[in-house]
Amino acid sequence: MTREVAVCNNQRRYLAIAIGSWVAWAAAGCSSTAPVLRTDDGTDAWSGRFHLKTHTDRAQTVAAMFTLEGSATQGQLLLSSPLGTTLAQASWSQNHAWLVANDQTTQFADMDALTTALMGSAIPVWALFDWLKGKHTVVEGWDVRLDDWAAGRIAATRTHPLPLADIRILIDPPQQP
Image (tube, rainbow, N blue to C red; front, side, top):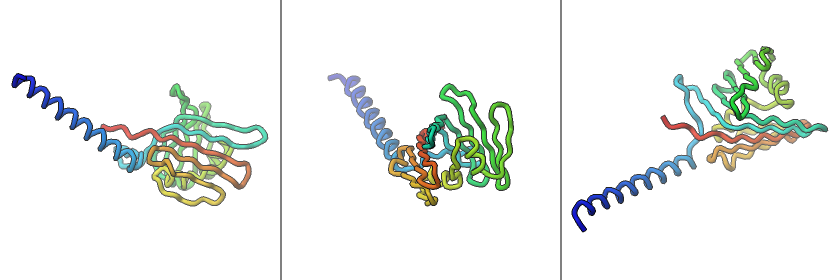
């Protein structure tokens, strides 16, 4: 074997080790860290897919892509179709919540009233932020499952008050800069 071939083989071996190490590091990071992004101003942000099924006489289902920024006290939620069409945009502060849908803006007293109007069921947005961070915050009437949180999956079921409601969230992995 010539010296050039040996050098080339060593480079390939080192490259394979480096790539393998990076893949192992990335996989370990994905399995143990929160799938949360930070905006330029340090605000928490998530994106992914959202599915809500409300079990009524005529079951209602909402499925959408989402982008969520902020906190339980102030933030913004954008729901869009898989093709990127904006379905609704919600914004909130401590005293009010706003919904923009179908070119109309509606103001609500709080996020419970807004989520009920938007999705047919009140969603505990204040707890949702904890759930998105992997924190098991207890909400009366809700059973949250964070078993697959590290993989970006959250499931929650509202058992009372009726109607029953199921939420499934799949969080997109953070994009690396």
